[in-house]
Image (cartoon, rainbow, N blue to C red; front, side):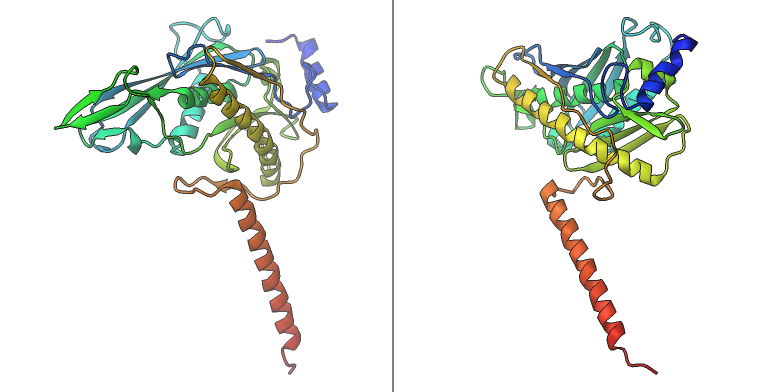
Length: 339
């Protein structure tokens, strides 16, 4: 806990439009993405400033669940290292914050069906791929949810599973030296964007540090993807937020998520050609004023395949159609005979 005399300083700085570490309210810390092994895919390390999260993805062949015989299995495991923060103690029951972080990250991937689970089926009702995602919190300097979300997606995109074939009901797994391993089928890339709320929700900052989290009144975590779909919302702390405020913060999160997603894709692409490749990026500063949202964010549908450009054109077409309808209605009212 911070000293009472110092509690008001970070909040007063945020009210003045500058944070203790020099960032503006909606700036994200320096992002570093590391893939330590090329021969062992699925290993990723992501840093947001001093916050560091490790993720490892592994796969094995096993029997499917009886209720889902044609789908693979995706499981998550989160480990909060006692070395990451004094708040994490070995042998103790996970705190509510630890449970919240793991659920938000898992829900953003599993319930939005970011991974094609049917592509993990080998023999229907008999053999499927079991993909396990193990997340380790190495250093906690705030905003663990966003860093863990980025680390999980980086590891899933970097992972390659061995190629298998089936003959006479038997499964054969080819070594990496014989056949090229194949990546997972990923429909979209959901990433978390978290805000710390101050002054009863009147002030919000993106990517809060541990000091800011200790002083916040509440939090808002938005899970979005590159198609500008709002996949999930997690609000904690009891601070009231109006729909307009949520839409404004969503517009900010969409822009920042697009930049993070672009850097993530570049890092994964470059890692395929360089061993132990490290990607470091400092995102440009975001405006301190919250822009008005261009449109209400839509809920994610697993079958949606429209691109952002298609969504934009559809929105403009709908707007012009509404204008035409309004003009036609006014013309009819003018031509309507009196009496």
